[in-house]
Length: 438
Image (cartoon, rainbow, N blue to C red):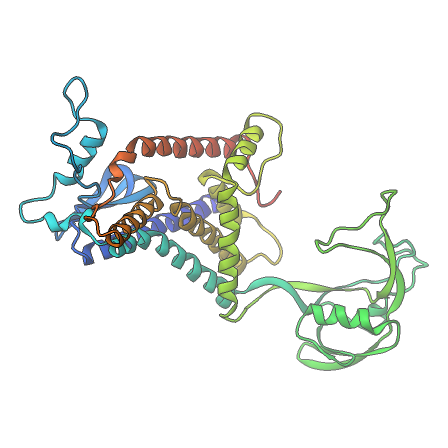
């Protein structure tokens, strides 16, 4: 039941994100006077709709996208005496698209066609959707960071080791093993370290750094235990400990054995908790999410090859590319997995993190300069502005709007690729799924 609830929450979040994306197109289009016959969330048969001020607002069966239908997306052909047609007399696909784009423009409404907008206004309309997704991602990120917190090690002890094992590769205590310095000093799980020696502690990094710098001399440690301040004396012991790299993995020598080095040892470990951050942390995290998403999109062809090899062969699945089926599985796991210390706050943060990733993916993916994506129309508007500026500099006639209708054959090819990618990811998510729980 919890699994289904998680999937439902994600589905609602996705539908709302799609709806707001389309509102990002709708509002400026209406503001600039473009005629907008339809605003729809989803595809397929219409479940519900209502017409308000000339625009039909509705919800369709398949919540896999949405659209705002604006008249005049394609301009009339220039320099053509008669519309081009096939050998059997029927209009070509390009001419059909032009006619469909213009057929709802009534007498006196020519100025309401999209292609009549200035280049800056076209950019505002087409960027409105992706930018809305970016804003949604930023808002969710702010709620996570400021309202819930980011998971990190804290200055509160989560564990105090009972002894110093004779064999550093073992964690169990033997009868002859001496007590660990932390246990001998009286430190307990739940103690909040306030000061370690001369270092005022604000996080676990301060504690680990003070232990490393303090050597094996006796150190005064101030802790907060259930609201009471206690002063303890801790004497670290120099022991051989495994060397780890920046990722926390053990470093091995030429023979494959863990490398050891002598370091001060206390035998304490931090707790792991959600810690709220200042609002100034948000822009950096949004940028980090953006650049990570751009990297995935730029390497998408090779990643899809890897996904195909994993789906139809024995290759390991690439965790960087997941379809909607896989994301739905993640949401279900977040809602249903039981674990100590994994409560409502953690579940909410993880669920919102999924929505951050989805909206950032929608933002970046829609900026790809190919039709029918928003980026294709943005590229067309930029090219139109460039042509007009060059024409003015050369004192030539206005070349008019870019005829994006000519790109329809390429557009259909892009649509076919997108559908194929969606089918591949759905299949891979079913036969070789990724899991948050391993």
